[in-house]
Amino acid sequence: MSDPYDQVAYVSRPFWQTHPAHLAVLGRLHGLDPAPVESARVLDVGAGEGGNLVPLALTLPGATFVGIDLAAAPVERGARTVRELGLPNVRLLQMDLLDAAEELGTFDYVIAHGLYSWTPPAVRDGLLDLLGRCLSPRGLAYVSYTALPGGRLRQVLREAMLAATPPELREDVPAFLARSRSVLALLAQGRPVMTPFDTAVAEEARRTLEREENVVFHDLLAPFFEPVSLGGFAAHAARHGLVHVADAGVVDSWNLLLRPEALEEAARLVPDDPLGRENLVDALRLRTLRQSILACAEASPVPEWAPPRIVGCHVSSSARETEPGTFELRVGGTLTLGRPEAAGFLRHLASIWPADEVVDDRWAALVAELFKYAAVGVWTVPSAAGRAGERPRGSPLARLQAGRGDPVVASLDHRSIQIVNPGVRRFLALLDGRRTREELAVEVGGTREEVDATLLHLEQLALLLPG
Ligand SMILES: C[S@@+](CC[C@H](N)C(=O)[O-])C[C@H]1O[C@@H](n2cnc3c(N)ncnc32)[C@H](O)[C@@H]1O
Image (cartoon, rainbow, N blue to C red; front, side, top):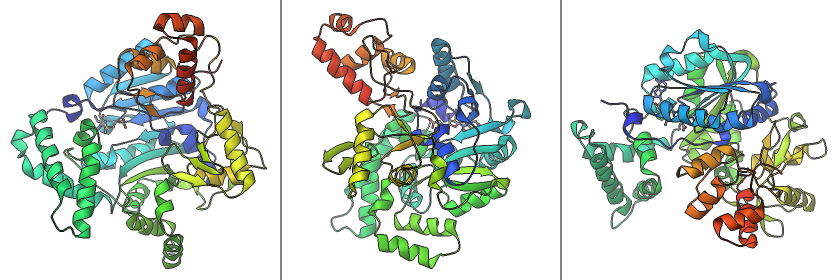
């Protein structure tokens, strides 16, 4: 069978949870001393076309980046992007991770997103073996996987879709996808009288129908789909000399939906095993994704956060205050802050976004608290995004992506941004720093006010360079 990633392009994009400066903050909070990000060596395993790696190389010019991937077509596309941007600090190589040899060297940060659960056992093993061999002593690795027990629900959908199309007909990808969508639509309807289990399956099918087709193909219809519990994953990592540090998703607002008493009861039931307790919480919320950070076994991370360790880091927030003290978060959901100094601090960060503040002693505990609820981002490096000047400059990568009509562009805070309006895409592509705001207005046939408003919008999306 052909390589699925050559058959159907996977839209490769940035994930803020994988940013080395974010991983370094979590490492510090857990008592580790990760390598400086500005000069780090970073490896992305299963890098695809570099949608996650290339934006890092752009904003961290003193660091070195290597991406490897088995599929030829995405590596070829990614190498073209690197050439067009003229980036000297990133290489994309077509290679099976099982063949990754010592010549690649050691790395301070290793990212493996969307790989572990979707590969055969030998490759899963090979991935952790590679991490065990190539992680530098202060290194951190990020590995995402479909988590148990929530992944079971996805298995129900997967098995129904696979049962509907026999293996010999799956090479006709458009027909396979069309039939799979019909299966999802059928499951989403449920039964006239719904049991709670029917409701859960129907809801998951509805959510899956809303996901992009290429994601469903590579996630749920991949040749391998192996959800794993946190405990099972940590045990596998331990066999390769690696220790679990934390989840890179920080809190994710889902835990906020649990009753505080339920979390306390979980802590009471499993007092002596932090991972066992987290497994139980995963069951309470039917968690489907984990983004584990690993370190070398010698690292001894501490389980509780030590906020003073983020003094000197950079904090920023794109939260929007909708009522006094209530903030809408970019990750979804809202946060209400009762303490006036906490609300005042977040209001100040929102007012300077996309710029940041350096965390000092006074604010470290509050910043850690807000970070836990994903209300702020905390990085070990300053924000690369800023406010537009008289001759606005967009991120060179986002401009290139907008100019070629990509479905998503990479922001300077390492997120993927969908720009639906073709006029805004064309406008972004023009922002090379040579045109004044007036000249831009003439070029797009708009008013100066329209240009200022669009620039403000792009600024808020962290797509513009400062000044
Ligand atoms: C779901 S994609 C994720 C791509 C990228 N990490 C991202 O998140 O956008 C998984 C990638 O892993 C690659 N892959 C699968 N098996 C591999 C192997 N044995 N060695 C290297 N890459 C592999 C696939 O070709 C594919 O590009």
